Amino acid sequence: MMCGSAFNGTTGFLPFGCSFTNAALWKCWHQKLVVLRIVQRFPKAGVSQPFSMVVRWETWIPGESLRIAEFQDVLGEPKIALQKLRELCFSGIPFDGGLRCLCWKILLNYLPVEKALWSTLLKKQRELYSQFLKEMIIQPGIAKANLGVSREDVTLEDHPLNPNPDSRWNTYFKDNEVLLQIDKDVRRLYPDMAFFQRPTDYPCLLILDPQNEFETLRKRVEQTTLKSQTVARNRSGVTNVSSPLKTSAPNSLSEYEVLPNGCEAHWEVVERILFIYAKLNPGIAYVQGMNEIVGPLYYTFATDPNSDWKEHAEADTFFCFTNLMAEIRDNFIKSLDDSQCGITYKMEKVYSTLKEKDVELYLKLQEQNIKPQFFAFRWLTLLLSQEFLLPDVIRIWDSLFADDNRFDFLLLVCCAMLTLIRDQLLEGDFTLNMRLLQDYPISDVHLILKKAKELQDSK
Image (cartoon, rainbow, N blue to C red; front, side, top):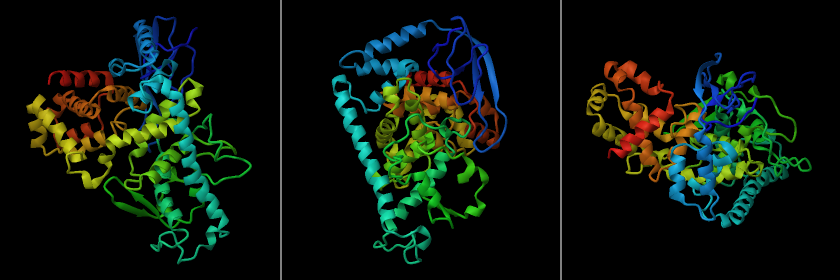
């Protein structure tokens, strides 16, 4: 039996006799003719229930090898034809040979189209990221240790919540407020996949140096004196304070097994990326939901079959995430909500597009007072990352990143999602329709993307 990639990596495939786990996206084909397609239905976050799977037969598509060859031809040129690459990527990027990882780096403006510049740029950016790690994680830990004061000896006057800017702990523990929220969110990132709890093949040796025993972010969280309360800042800027005694078991620090010295889990890498981003961007810092944006990026780069790229998944993810956030960060800033670049304008644009394409459905939603804020806020802010399974999110992002006006296309995808369930929405009452919109029923993202493209072409 042979195993190899037969499709574009958006679904899992299982040949006879092979085992399947939810941590792996198997892309195996059986005798080059027929494959068994397994679409895994994960339970809702925080809900413990057995997995269920939908299984169906599909014919292997020989043309996929031709698409791979097309990608290789475009990427093999000294200067990549960006428009041609966009056209190919829009229809889905094959997983084979790390094509998706490479294409995303180009589409997110991390890699230039001139391939001769790649080596120098990558060396420079990865060295820069190492410098960020030294300045924002390693050095603060060293400085804290050099104070010669244990955390139990922190006085009331030198408490981390003390507003006195002269407090030697002030900056360190202000960062901890952000770090605690990041830590809470990344630990539950895609809880139904084992990937983020598994050890990375390339731990950060700069921090996990056995000769120095630098303080990791995980250790920093575990040792923090902010034990009396957990401070959470959501997208709307609301601060929630809760006692750790009320913290549910699934969110406890002891939920995940401690890895051996010198190892770190993938979620710890994501935590580091978000912490560095928050430090470098104090105006926005970290807002809940950013973890849902960085997760698919890191997963894609950390599963690159090319070890030369995979080794630097952390640094490459950081810069691609930074570039992506430069385009969507206004969605996370409440003060910009009502501006033309804010999230409110974009949600209203979904409805105005719907009104143009399907006025009957638009009027029905208006009649029931179903505002776009009730569902489109999450769709737009998180780039649909919570509406579909991770492989399908990645497939949507192929088209999203490839489109010249990528976030105009996102509005069309949202509009397509509405029109595809128009019959149910027209028949349903407020409660039923809200349930449909907040737990979207269609799992075939190819159908959604096809409809969105039709809406785009009909303009």
